Image (cartoon, rainbow over all chains, first blue to last red; front, side, top):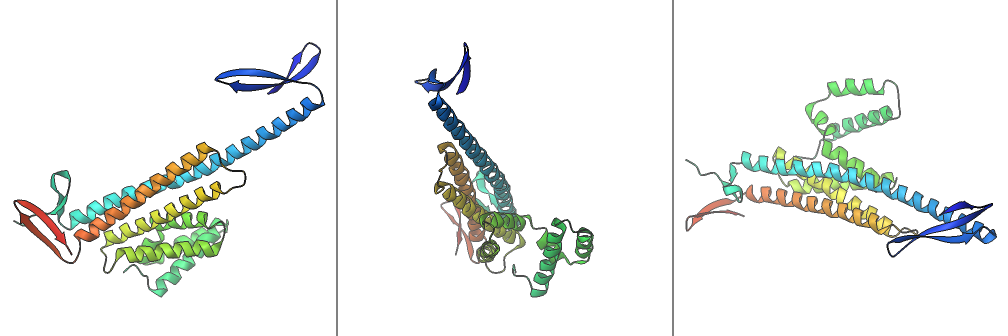
Length: 102
Length: 176
């Protein structure tokens, strides 16, 4: 969406995607074209603000989740440590079994 | 036991206040904090350096929406949950396990609250954003359930009555 110079005048055009193709649509240079351009600008600004907010929120959620991942890894290690300390072993990499006493 | 004596709780609270002062750029608070920590006993140092609890405090702060009451209530609920999960006379490793399970629970609650808040926002959220948040929530939930499973397995195998029997050459563990 932009104002483009054609000859002596400046005209507002909208770029739209239709069926996978990008098409440029002529809007004009009158009062209505200015209102439409202003509305488009506001819409783009609101969209960009929302995207930035969502990105920030996602970044925060990701960093919290990544710390959660580390906690979970610690849980796995602790559980194995507790069982090994209690005398268990993984039978053929599966079920936990108590070591036979000699 | 997980429950700390009142004296230790009070000392931890005082250290927390000093730490808050340090975060407010109070000159000398850091030095005082170091000096006090060097004099403290092992229980206090261990409790203050517990990363699972610190993480939980951070999550509670984020979930509370700025309300100190909600923040403290979430921390307290997680603390009680960790106590309950650890059971009676837990080993040090089971204590650490239950602390982490409780922290993961707070994380799952927070993710759900964040997602719900975005669903109900007036301007709405883009489908891509909701999808990514839902994926994060799903992954946290999976880890939380995995952690519960690990703790349950440890407690089952460490149960008071464990019997091993051989049936047809197969060794079977039975815990009651």
